Amino acid sequence: MSKVTSVRRCYHCGKVLQDEDPNKEGYIQSEAFNKRSGNEILLCLECYDKLRYNEAPASAEVNEDYLKMLGDAKKEGALIVYLVDLISFECSFVKKVLDAIEGLPIVVIGTKRDLMPKQADSEHLKEYIAHRFRVEGFKQVTNEDVVLLDWTSSADVSTAVSVLEKKRNGKSAYVIGAKGVGKSAFITSFLRQYRNTSNRGVGISSYKETSLEVWQIPLSDEASLYDTPGTG
Image (cartoon, rainbow, N blue to C red; front, top):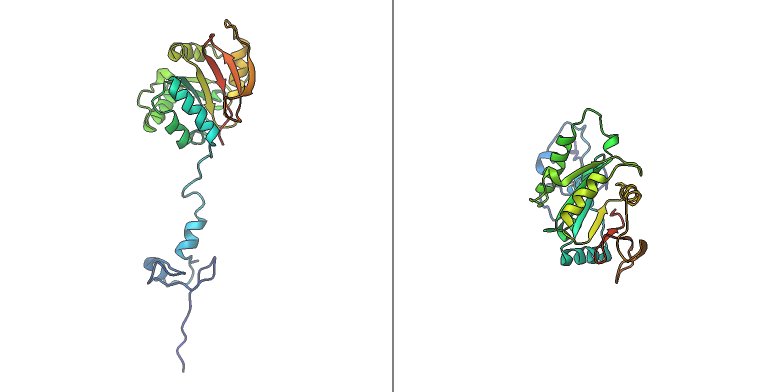
């Protein structure tokens, strides 16, 4: 009687599995390959890596025009008004953006406070946000640099404006954050209490030498508040 030899194949791509050479197709680690219950669905290492969708989530793309704008902010020593979404907190961080604004003064606004549980302590939320920014390398951020804001165009932004004026030191301020974080609501609320004391008007235009459309709100004859496009 002839001996029957079974061939084990990858469930996804169908390649013959082998545990001897990682550089050849169908490679699978020995501990997985040698399981003999017969019930496991086996994948070669290549397919296994492809199918682990959340192993390394993709970072939001930031174009060169956006980075150039942040480069101008850094040259000026401008204030960054960084809006983060309390409901989708981790999506608010983009490494290229964080690298570009490293060393600049920051005011952090945690939006959608009204959507958080009522029993959530505001001071604890502010300290957690400050902690996360310190983890990202912004060692200077404390809970005094964090303002919580409701997600409505009628929200009271007086506290945020007070902190902004205190920290910008006469320089411009750039409002940044992910799409959907609430920048438009913040700007609308800001304009409700805004008084223009400069010789320039409020307007929307292309940021210099880029294709970015930004709101430019004069804070003085020399400085402006820039409402920038949202990151992905």
